Length: 71
Image 1: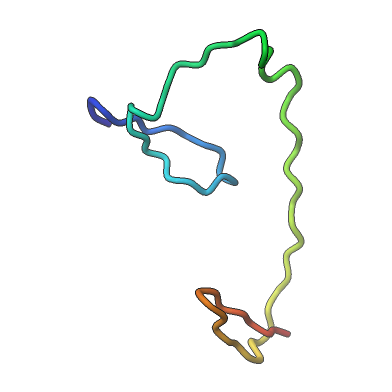
Image 2 (image 1 turned 90 degrees about the horizontal axis):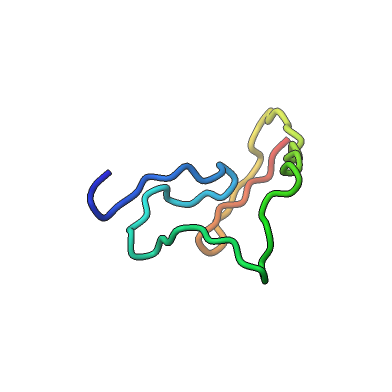
């Protein structure tokens, strides 16, 4: 992206910004203490159940969040 920024592709479930300043990045180095990475394939992600909303019965704001009562 530029001389001091990198655009990375983190996993979608991380929900973080994908642009990083070079000052916080460093090359990967395997150490004896840490050991090798990725000896096994990553686990499958668990899919969450989905529901179809017929109607929103009520709603309220609690702090910064919104809560909904649905049928």
